[in-house]
Image (cartoon, rainbow, N blue to C red; front, side):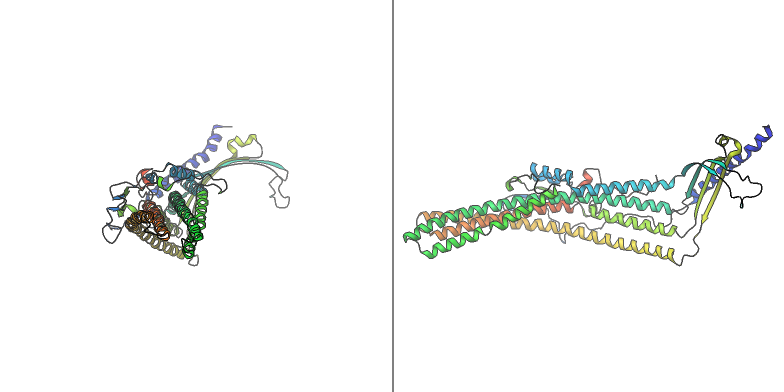
Length: 508
């Protein structure tokens, strides 16, 4: 082979490099001057309210038992807020639920899927490189082959690599990845909401079950006392010292008290089954913690986030914000679909009828190309797809506002509920003390012969009824405390740092 022939062989390769350099320079210039169509998303401004309720938010609530709850905007919502009830058994139930709940596993799997989809979508910003190799044995058609083409059977070997790159001139691909990023943020807050809901439900179930158990024990005490009184009354009626009608009154009251037990026991069974499911266990196999109602303590220091911070804390609000972000980016995707789309392609390889010939200069083949697609007429489809994207954004904005209103309403309702819980518990505490004093006085009068069995029984029943009502009022105060922690967002940001600020979309 002469030197001149080798030079002639090199010219196409040199030309290819020039074309490739020109293509890269053109793509760089277009990317620099390109733009992202559609609105740039910014998180909605937080409400300017300074209070949750119509008046001043409560500073503290005091019950008659002396237990005071203090509310402070300076206090942080702890991420492990359930520990404020000072019950190791409740702590264990929560941790077991977080580890075993299918709901949590589902939310975490969806979050991983959304993040992997985001990483997959970001690949569009890199050149797409593919390699291909092939070997075939061919025989051309005798009738269709040109006269100068050999009509024999031959082998064909090919080896090539291709590169393609979509120039995102108007940011349509960037907006599509922005949708994926917003979807990942949405799923992240779905997972946070799932954890918060699970923890709140476990805490409420534990409180309710402990209260049911305490009510059952108090009712059983009443029934035990009433049975003793019925036995004594029956003996006295037989001896003629008590009217038979009085004995019937006592028996009727005993039967009424006994009728209270099955519904209470049914509530306890249902509560235990619910707790089993929340902890990720079958009701027949779960080993539930036995928590006495007296083991629970009311959280004293209650955090109260400032209203403007609530929108960065509540997972449901952050979910709505992520949906709004995705809808905003969707407008850009629909707008870019109406504009030109430019792509660059290149290929380099070799083709030969022999394996050894694939690596000779004469077998080299290459191509460079650029393509532009401009929608011209689609019957209004692209235009109305963009209008639909705008409508979806408006719907997401309305949904966001509604969720914020509901969230602020829940905090306000819970604060007022805790105030009223303290008032109700104070009244029940006074009722217990009054009924206890009345019972002691009636017992003294009965011992002195100044009161009947019926009077003593009624005093005892009033005392036990007051105790049961006090248990219910205390359980309600506990559960409304749980509701406040949940309404404020659960404190997840104090476990993983401050609430995540809105991030500018990134392609890498």
